Length: 363
Image (tube, rainbow, N blue to C red):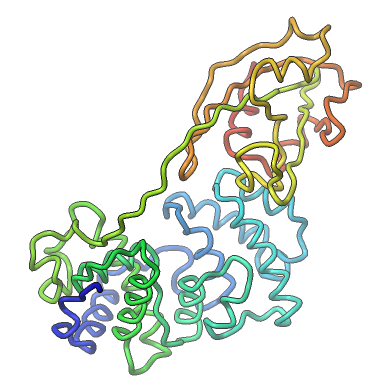
């Protein structure tokens, strides 16, 4: 069983008090989703920040709020509009869950987000840590978050050496995280504490070369005392990276219309992408150049132009994309599921980032 070497040494009140004071002076206060207790804005930021850098999220967050200023507007919008605005942010299941969650909030909760983490967690796309972030920041609930940054902060401080690839060990860390929360003036302290542990992981307790000299709890930190903070957290299971080659048929008319096919909402089983691009509009995908040729009538084969291959990196897969451009008449249909989209129409569709980047080029 894992040990938390400092579970006795870290005095709970001292831990939380130091983090609260540090956050007030040294924490981040200029992010557009801070200084608010509006659950819609906090929820939106939490979903966008999952596996995405703050610098990237800033721009998307502002555009989303401009287009969807509240949960009712988002719920009423077509999914295509949401996916189009999300295009380029990646992990598109987040956008689909975002839309589904907004609709559930309207239907099940009268347009008001639930005030407790347990009920929030029942909504689409809201996991335990995200639910806790919303409940603690917006409603002062005494409930712990445990995202990647916070896991790093707590395992180092506590000297928690359990393998977080094991469910039992992660459950043990959740318990310790809960014990370290403030106990007084929760309406004020819980939002600040939650922000403090996130800020610590983002600005001080970094994965490599943490700034231990700037840390307000360095003297309480087991990993710092051991002189090996980068040994934590422990997580042994690593998903094996794979690679896949796909040929993209970029069919275009003389006036710039592009042939696109909307992928099934469930992702479909036609290729190993599964749900990655589910619901998005995409070029026709093939597993070889010969398959591309077979999809295009023979009289236009001479016009098939193979463009430079480029790589698109997903979380655990490298996609090697082979674009093949061809000019075709608008009267030709390449499949029953696809459609021609005019030059001034396709940019507003939900497109995978590499497809959008490709279509924005000039051939």
